[in-house]
Image 1 (tube, rainbow over the protein chains, first blue to last red):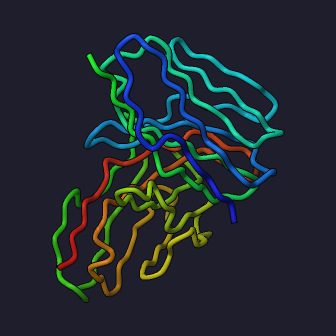
Image 2 (spheres, helix red, strand yellow):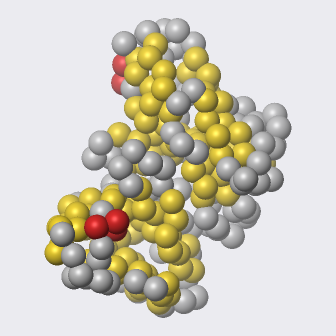
Length: 111
Length: 115
């Protein structure tokens, strides 16, 4: 089955610095690459996604880059703020209805 | 307001006592899914439904049942709960159809404790 790994599992950055989280997957048929953010005690919410025909997508301070050859995609957050502190999950999906989530990355933005 | 609702939000029960967690969405989504979230393990899919009367197993279906009699509702049934089913459960829905994926909208979660 699909194997999804996220790195790092925890990440601490100073406010204003950048953060990068990487998601590696095994299924070469994956064609949808979302990132979800889960704040403490809240539900996961989509923050950005990309499809396999696009290499990069940006939305204000967040961006996602995709390397299909190497089978990984990354979440980039620039100018980090305390409200970016949360757990982030990737969930690459292929041509089935199953979703496999990564184990999550806990991001702490230090003021 | 477009939303996914779950009930109850918190539940403490005992081993073997059947329970149902309800999930409802008002967005006319065809796809619905149940996940459990445990520390260090992320979100693991239990069951999903592509449409009314169509369901399939996710990665961790053992000990759970689901049904999809109506488009808006997707209840999760634990026929004989055991302590290892203590977890945080999320229901989600999406416009996803065959081969085309979209954002999943999650419910607020149900924290279940089985003693």
